[in-house]
Image: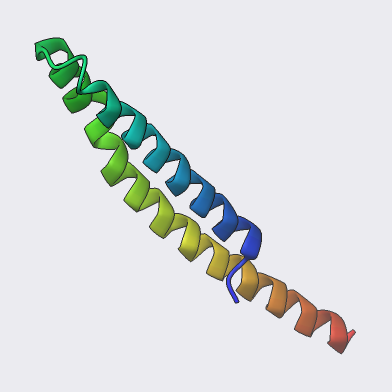
Amino acid sequence: MPNAKALAGATRLGQSFRQLRDQWLATEATWSDEVRQRFEDRYLAPIESALDSATLGIQKMAEVLDQVRRDCSDRSELL
């Protein structure tokens, strides 16, 4: 099982982004000018693809950490 703490962090990161996106969408009713669109394009849109990459990296890292833990446990049994 991949490292639960790392995966929990990835989950929290995703939840935080969804909250940010929901709050941002709520502003659209009262703020819908060019400045808002520019801010969204420049700062918010890139977060989603970066988040996908980060989540994938965290999942891979969790798998590696688990493998390291297993390997170290096996070696300590040999000593």
